[in-house]
Image: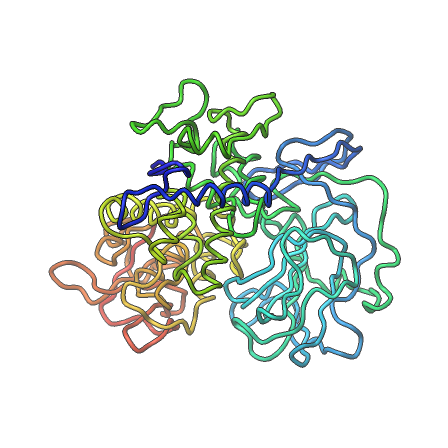
Amino acid sequence: MTLVASPETVVSPDSKAPRRWWKLILAVGIAALGVLVVVPLVVIVIVTSSGSNGCAPTVSSGTGGEDSSPLTPSGPIGKPTRDGTTTMTSPFGQRWGTMHQGVDFAGPIGTPIYAALDGTVVKAGPARGFGMWIVLDSIVDGKPVSTVYGHMYPNGVLVKEGQQVKVGDHIADIGNAGGSTGPHLHFEYWEGGRLQGGTAIDPMIKLGQAGSPQSAGDGSATGVGAVVDCGFGTAGGDLRAGSVPPEFEPWIRKAGAVCPGVSAPLIASQLSAENGFKYGPSAPVSSTGALGPAQFMPGTWATWGKDYDGDGRADPNSIGDAVISQAHFMCAINGDITAAIAAGKVKGDPTALTIAGYNAGPGAVLAAGGMPSGGDYTTQTQPYVAKILAGQAQYTSQGSAGRFVPTGADGDNVVEAARQYLGTPYVWGGGDVNGPSRGGFDCSGLTSFAYFSGKNITLPRTSEAQWGVGSEIPIDQAMPGDLVFGSFDANGPGHVGIYIGDGQMIHAPTTGDVVKQAPLMAGMKARRI
């Protein structure tokens, strides 16, 4: 779906009169955003993609590709907290029936947390299970490594996405947010990249004889840079590998690093909705004249279209030009809306309102003080926003939004995905493939999330419809990850859960209760998908 109007003729929800003041916003936005920085040509270490499971490094000479980012190899690792300020309270490994993918360092709220490696901050914000987290991408011995720092409060995150840090830099303060049992730092070490689906390693093996932060950093490496693909080293690493056409993937990853408020999965979902990833001279033009993969109106393209692929012309049908121009336009809208929310002039989710601004024009969002409604805004803009928000999940790498990363068999992954939300409130109609919504899950919302996260399967949304997927098996043959159904009536099962073994299931029971582990109900039936 295209912009309802070009920026020169943004309309309000109450009137079709143009709002000329948007020209001023555009001018300011252009000046503020500038253009993408050109990656310098250097002798490099190239880390190449290895399918959807992560990055597999190889060393060679070259200049890197479009899906690359420069990183300086890190010096020796340092401890994430100063000696004597914290105590290691929970090791790496199995804990409470699930995998603890890091180690915990307990200490008072506000205790400083330090960067364990030199690198680039690729995540700094909210994440499932962590409260707030920081993901730092680094190059260690020619390989991509992520360190993760979790459970901070918002005011305890002291860095921003895209920021370069050194070993020993003060990046955060200990908090007690998310799924935390007391003030502590949860620290992880991932070979192959956290966002790229790498492998979690026991951090204590790596920390070894590491120095306390006050003495760390003196051995930081210098010299040749490293260029890493798969979006490693940028916020674009949260794009699921292989989820978009290969010619789009490097550009979408680059677009996801333009600003923190506009992610690569959001750009991908938008491109899918706009024109189905069609591009080039033969790409269809909409009935309103919108062009190219991002469906820019000619007037909007005249302002925002730039030559990002280096061929000397700004072409709305070029993948690189369209996708990066789309990212800059979205970031400008997101900046204005975020500022308006902070000023109390607009209410709502900034991502949803940014999408609405792209579709209807940002003036419509600002004039409405939130999501525009009425007329085309109700019939076109609001469904467009809902479609793109829902579509993000299929383009998002596992684990990039928080705790869960598949590591075992499919059935175990489904159980693990559900288990991370134990204690989450039951909310009728709550939850989907992205996780909880409206503050929680209902029974089929939980199973929808667990199956998408654990097996990349999109289930129908209701228990009755989920009963029609897969094959029924005897209940005594159920295996972990199978669906179990109960409360049957003429319309089918009224309840669904996830079998975890030993006659137990994880389910979201009913209003007033929470996601929990419980014995199977009498008369339950099982299906395998």
